[in-house]
Length: 211
Length: 405
Image (cartoon, rainbow over all chains, first blue to last red):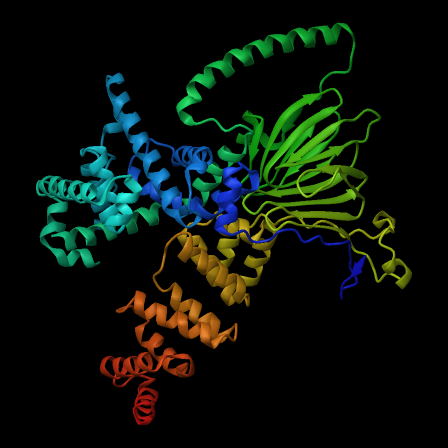
């Protein structure tokens, strides 16, 4: 038994394996070990949340926690496909992007079931909303009209600010494909934005964007 | 136009980050992912939901039949429970507290106090007791001692078997921290890092850090032990009669205290909730407040941890690099590290509001700067701030550096 400076007695403290490397983490995930699954959530939870939130945008009717849960379940079950431990962040981002895309597709495919789709209505304008908030909401509203593949490519490139190679990896397509997809998305977005009274101001007055 | 789109994207991203409740969302996602032994993907949830409904109905019918039979056999009634104060949590078997405590009173006299920021589920009740699950946070249990009492308290992956006792159990899923303090009686614990079962008796605290792979059993309030006792590892800790009362987490919100400049009081509440837990559940604004409170409250290491969380997990850069530099230089006595952070700030925020200070502080740390960066910083400082506080130092640096071979 150990006694510390304050006179408090401590029983033995048993050191066990401490910090895990990505390689150990991937090894644990492949063997479906609980500690590895928890550690994956610990390390990449916020990263996944952010990726999913970016892709889904103002789709308030989706529970983000549900989608994140799905991402990790998918990640746990597909961990055996991850060959290189260094690629873990790209892999989890790809799983997150793919899951978020599927969420959007599922919602769209079920839209015909509704006679009246209140969740497709734009959110009521808030008196306190700033220019930036307005731009945010209107941007995602325009994006919701675009095909899912183009929407996701646009979001990852222009909102998340990812490099083309990273976007291609996240969308699981080639670099050439993602370039074409982003170009198409950009054209569609600009064409629609020109008829939006708020976004058109942001497009014309580039200086406002530096706020 | 592409450049303008990128700028619009940055604005949209900023609004998105400001609106996000990252900590709360992740907490719920974590509970869903690890709260049940077999997580079910949402695509299958409806099917499983229907199956579950049928199963529940069958189980309910069976339960009623068993209950009627139990009444006819005159066996003791199953314990029931009620929530104090008609709180909204009373509607379900899952109780979640934010900034308040609540009490769950059982019909056989036991009382469970659910402390702030805690989630508890009643898994089931029986004549001899109940099964509880602490999904996160701290619970104080006062279990009435009866001859046939049989209670099980799950705390994450740990099981605590109880007959009659008073204890406080804590499970923090984000950090995988388990803590059990016995105020009275004894319990048996099973779970990770525990071979077989661990007996914990009155006056002991058993702590397991699952992620770090550490465990400890501490005798509370023990005075200086005689040498003979120190040498004997087998001496039962339960003999010590002085028990330090377990401190309840205060119900005051730490962020309110931090915002009013009461950093130490705020940090003491954060300590009780668990610094890591609070940090993991923080959004950008809360993490920043926690970093500020830690820095001003004299805890540079925790401030550094919160700032790194902001940068690495929430991907918020802004002036975090500058503050990290300041902490390294002023509080951690790590000048080389400080230089790297100031330099990082200058690269990340070339026109940032703290540019003058960052350049000046970099010049002060010239010993740790590569020569070309030192010259560039000195020139940049003099061009942008010819009358600045560090202008003489910049001139001196230029003179010395250009004279040097």
